[in-house]
Length: 85
Image (tube, helix red, strand yellow):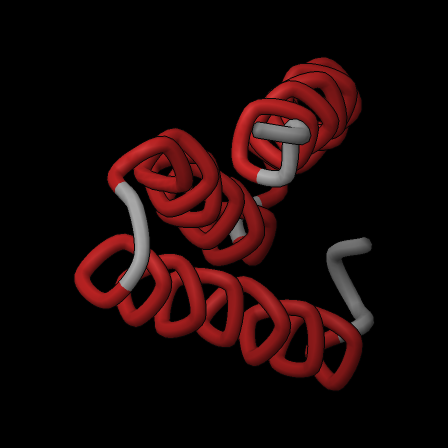
């Protein structure tokens, strides 16, 4: 992903969107979504560090691990947030 600057920029926008959305939802509704905000920040850092050749391979592996962790956090947060009363 070293020579794909356009893809890095677009995925950075997605990570920034996750951060903004996580912030708004955390402030307005519930703090359970705060974990998604933190993982969005981690994604943004990993995406931006892929510009460097040494970190590119390590960042891709870390992104894969953090992606699955974020998926679990999203599922748990949504189940907890929308559980029946």
